[in-house]
Length: 258
Ligand SMILES: Nc1ncnc2c1ncn2[C@@H]1O[C@H](COP(=O)(O)OP(=O)(O)O)[C@@H](O)[C@H]1O
Ligand SMILES: [Mg+2]
Image (cartoon, rainbow, N blue to C red; front, side, top):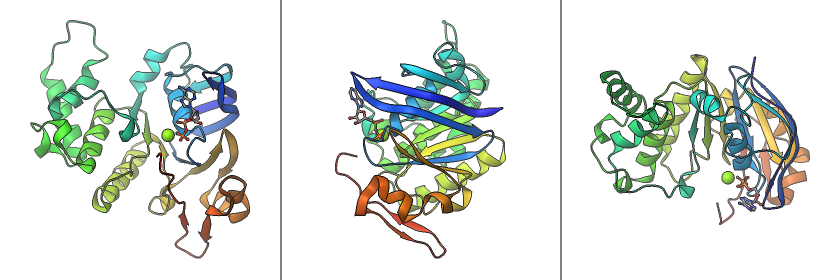
């Protein structure tokens, strides 16, 4: 089975074609990284995989399910770490409740918290190295701490597929390395991970599929097939430099609007 199978996917947002004829096949388990300039449709693709956005045409299957028809079932199998700078839903709430919320979301009311739920929340916070933050207020944490908590929230229900939207934005190098290690261990345990990032240099050895997206799939393959100036310049123009001796590095100047 593939984690994601899409063909001819077109997604319009208020008339704007954010994704155009996207055809994609990702095996399971695998670690996929999606790169592309701001506005390329990366977040739109993740939201379409989750069933939060519906394509105008084309087909999509996520772990064998159609997110346009069974979004609830897809959400049960897919963990999602949204782009942190886009999150605005946080009323003052304790860290452990932020994580618990995601676990309870799938229960029928009344949503009793069981010992098993409490243990799962504790374990998820331990995995991301945030157990000592459990009783802190989420909105008072640093960016890196918030990112850990959001990842705990995404893995607390043991997803088969984890989607991470620019998880490295505004976090320290230590946290970045720990997130990387976490991705590696999830992948080893049979979880598929799809990550959007502008910075592939630290994860390059882990990547199974690298996708260059610009409204449609410009290139897909191993990092060395995609991180080539002749490929990247189609999308980034002269803003890109590739240093092709190992380790392979790529620098993409960040646009100001994230
Ligand atoms: N609700 C919306 N209505 C119209 N256009 C949108 C909407 N949301 C996003 N867009 C546009 O769709 C394009 C893709 O957005 P997005 O998927 O967020 O790109 P990325 O994550 O690659 O930066 C952008 O040009 C963005 O301005
Ligand atoms: Mg985005």
